[in-house]
Length: 205
Length: 205
DNA sequence: TCTACCAAACGAACTAGTTCGTTTTGATAC
DNA sequence: GTATCAAAACGAACTAGTTCGTTTGGTAGA
Image (cartoon, rainbow over all chains, first blue to last red; front, side):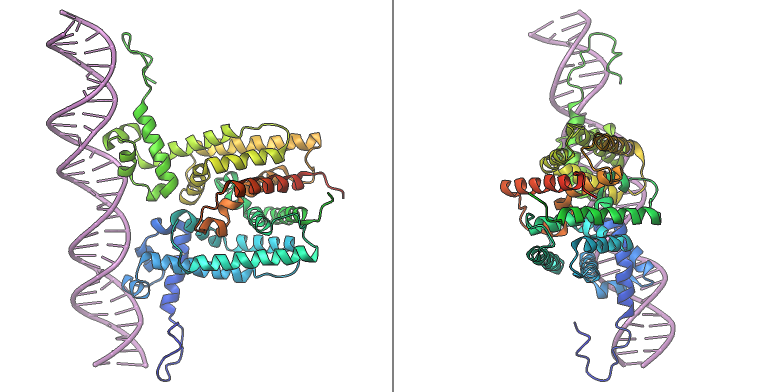
């Protein structure tokens, strides 16, 4: 943004490490408590920064939330960026990512529930990602590896629903134990991949 | 509770209509804003009740939230109570309900995000419902109408994920228009049913 | 000196929960 | 019909605590 046009030598140095620390602390805070539940003081403290710094970098709590949301969406999109020609294995990768970074899905859920209006940059990111995904499915359908019977946008939504089903299912979400044994994760991943594979296989009839 | 042992005639009359109004207003408020975002004053006002009344019926904000959560879970379970022998059509019914009562899924999401610990009665309700669902799937597998290759609890989660995929998918959740045209709803329902049907059909191999 | 930073405090707004005096209601007694 | 009574309800004010966002005074390094 404004790091490019510095007058003299001014080495790019550490690219605002304080800002970075604040952003990371905010990410954890917002993921845990949402926009309304997050506490500015706690973010500053966990970032080992002062509130004064926080408010020079981000003018409002909402602005900080938007920054976190945008960062998460960008990371999410980058991490699962359209690899390969197998939608089922793509779903597996998506699942892996949702396990490795549960905060990404949490922030998305917080944003959905708490900010029914806001448009922002984040919204554009989501639209772009979604469009790209749909386009990918369409080309897979053209290539014949995905059943043409599906509306591409429906299939995209279904895959996301399947990938995140254990995040959203009440029974496992409310359960006391995290149930995150490695074996459980692996079994769930296999189910995700198998489910998507069953959806896409060009069916008879 | 104490309506039974009244000295004289004292007809049971209207069984606490004010409490009912408060509960309904709270339901709308919590669904819209969650536990932290909900405002007690707003609930009281929308219920056409005074705060004094609200606090005689429910001692704390959290207690009111629990009551709402329990009510919603009960209604949800009752509305979709294990009908029929076709899991795919069951998913369709679940989808219909999620469209007719979006507040039910919203409250569940709020509870998941905002109350990571609380056990309460609601938790038991969820467990019971889940267990019942798994048992149903097991018997369908025994009967041969559902592929035995699936772990029953996995399939249960997958069905829920498929049913609620448009609620949780960022692209449609963040989208400006509700996109709730009747035609769209019907098409999505068809996709849900078809997806589940593809999952359960006993496959070759 | 200028910039980045911190710790501490402050003001204003908000909010959960309480209290209090008054009013309404509905049933019974006269 | 009217007097009476108790419970349910209202509404407004109040307490006590919390939180955002700002400000102030001061430190350390380039």
